[in-house]
Amino acid sequence: AALAASTKATVKDNDRSHVFHSWSAQELIDPLAVAGAEGSYFWDYDGNRFLDFSSALVYTNIGYQHPKVAAAIAEQAGKLCTVAPGFAVDVRSEAARLIAERTPGDLDKIFFTNAGAEAVENAVRMARVHTGRPKVLSAYRSYHGATSTAINLTGDARRFGNDTATAGVVHFWGPFAYRSPFYAATPAEECERALRHLEDTIVFEGPQSIAAIILETVGGAPGVLVHPDGYLAGVRALCDRFGIVFILDEIMVGFGRTGKWFASEHWDVTPDLICFAKGVTSGYIPLGGVAISAAIAETFARRPYPGGLTYSGHVLACAAAVATINVMEEEGIVEQSARTGAELLGPGLAALAERHPSVGEVRGLGTFWALELVRNEETREPLVPYNAAGADNAPMAEFGAALKKAGLWPLLAGNRIHVAPPCNVSAEDVAKGLRIIDEALTVADAHTV
Ligand code: PLP
Figure 1 (cartoon, helix red, strand yellow):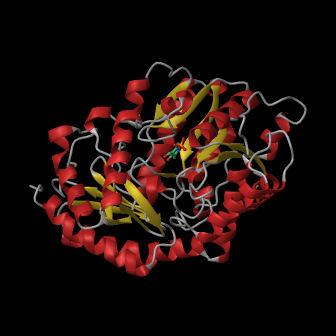
Figure 2 (cartoon, rainbow, N blue to C red):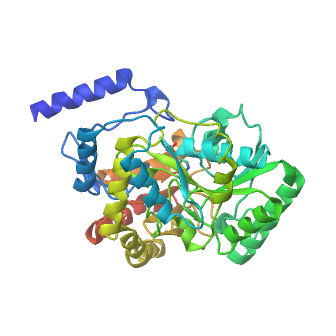
Figure 3 (tube, rainbow, N blue to C red):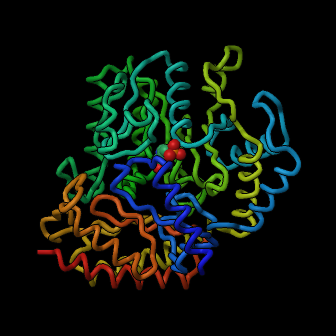
């Protein structure tokens, strides 16, 4: 215990002195010192164990420390830690094959990146070169990453500090029935009006200037926004009509999160480019990429692709991807994610909504859900205002503290809790997580009016 205490102090001291954290005012944060993790849990140096209902940042789709993936990484490290991206090498070839086998349609070529934002950057570059057009359309509320192009495509408040490079980006409203930007009364009406709005945006921006439309297949950071049936097919049709490249960002939802390998399978829609990252290796080694259609690949068949990365298809990351995909296949983890959603999380969260006045809406699929918390179910006023901080955010902060105290690590965003445990979370841990959320929601209920 004494050793653990001194280790914890050193870890914390060095972190506070030298680590500069993402998205944070550095002096206002107090990062938890994590000592280890396994399966759906991680723990600190004081022996507190947390059931991780955030899957880190929604990427540990097979949980922490899967022995087969850890072993595959160690084996690759013993054999060949690195090799330049220009060579053909076994694990990279195999990772590309396994991914291409799972992508829809003729998206059969894979460009590897280090993570998500770089996948978005490269998809946009491919679309611009392929079409010779400059603009890209993306949705308000979306999140596409934090590099220059990706953060400006992003449609949430994280863009605000980065508004210097918006050239070529145009935002539009996607469908969101619960808070309809179109005053629609039904999902079908929401879908129709959202498509009409997108068509108008295209026409008034000038179709000849638009290279691509990028969409999260299911909105992740925006709050698990599941598009109404027909919307993605409608966007596909608009892209075809106007010669626009359709990019689906599957970075958060690919590799089992929604109960399919790729979320686009739910609606049987094939885009021209798919961006992936996160779940492809369960985050054990960073990896991302773009799956490319035959037509776009053809553009670069006899003309060089004007982009590249030192670590494109890093062999340790590719070994992790091969092992992760094989483990997901062998253990039926994609199917498990679908079942957990349909049989446990969906009904369980709906029951919480019945009992708690602070729950305005439950939505999701697979192991990917959100509860929209409100001050009043009739007015749907969010429990905290958009982009709230400090005292304004107190109700969500109190709710989060209650969850952590009870041993559940939540993913809180705005006025929502996102429920995203590992895709292979056990039924017992789902039940435990639901019990903890049930109890903590009484804290949120106290703020309803
Ligand atoms: N796109 C989506 C939909 C995401 O959820 C994320 C990360 O959360 C990104 C892009 C950016 O990925 P990365 O943080 O790996 O650059």
